[in-house]
Amino acid sequence: MEGRSSPSGIGGTEIRILPYPILVADDALGHVAELAQEFAPAHRFAVITDSNVGPLYGRRALAGFPAGTAELFVIPAGESHKTRETWAGLTDDLLSRGFGRDTTVIALGGGVVGDLAAFVAATFMRGIPVVQVPTTLLAMVDASVGGKTGVDTPAGKNLVGAFHPPSVVVVDPQAIATLSLRHLRAGFAEAIKYGAIADSDYFDTVTRELPVLLASGGGRVSDSFSRLVVRSIEIKADVVLRDERERGLRKVLNFGHTIGHAIEALSGYEFAHGEAVAIGMALESDLAERSGIAEAGTADRIRHSLGVAGLPANRPVGISGDRIVEAMRADKKARGGEVEYALPSRIGAMAGSSSGWAVAVADDIVREVLQ
Image (cartoon, rainbow, N blue to C red; front, top):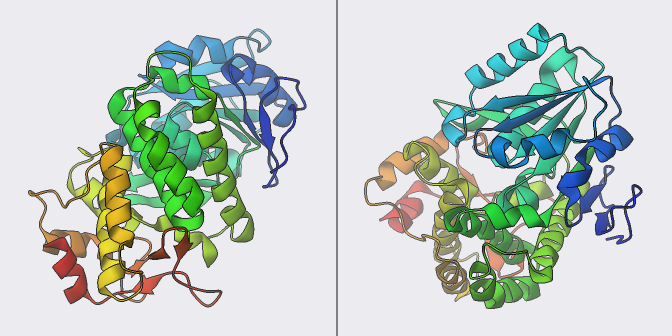
């Protein structure tokens, strides 16, 4: 990591691992306009947000743009609206308001907005710049970094999308203060994942500090929170740098997501993404131990950390194992009819090598774990 003041002088930490900068700074939301104009200059700016974030930060994000150059587009909040229909509606709105190739999209919100707005940018006029401005913990540490965009379909999550890296990612940790406790917990699922896949010391640090971090909601976000955000971003950015298109190493980032995505979709998105990933990590670490891939105790340590975070760790009673197995076959991570899993060998390390970072596991073992 290279930590120094940003080129625009907003302070904080600049992470320069990927080709685009990731800026983490308190009150960065007040500098969206100048950062967008610096890193993705355009004639017009389309700020896409949702009905939760818009009233909180929409006006603040628009402030600083020259008069008439930036407009706000608000979509309904929630994963159920991350669809091709919403994508089409936004695209039509951009066209009807006269936006053209000389446009930059600004994705202001959580993971749903980040995925959807970036997919609009990837496809509008065959591709225009996007600036990611995540406002949830999960989006800060995961969804806004890496260039994946997409929408959900009835067959599963993110099955239609494109790789479209942002021009800059602008992270304001103080936005975490407005999150509900449920969404704060959901964001910690991804932080736990990064420790589990790449850094055992970080895993222990997150687990140890969770009670204090969860109890600190409502006020100004602490430096500990900011350090957690920065370290999670560093881990993801390092993996993405080595495998941008997920042909190998980047598959380790899918730990918890194969089972998690199936549960999320089958629940009708009743589970938040982080909650579903938490269940997925618990079950997939069990799968790793039963398959002889992970050292004994790995699953217990992950379940303990999830428990400290107040996250679920068991298959939902109303969703059968057979339904989960069937849903996973439609996932984009399946290959040749076989479901592949990113599995830990221990806390801080994943199973695999340059020849492959995802493991196919027999359905009978998977069903045992899902009982």
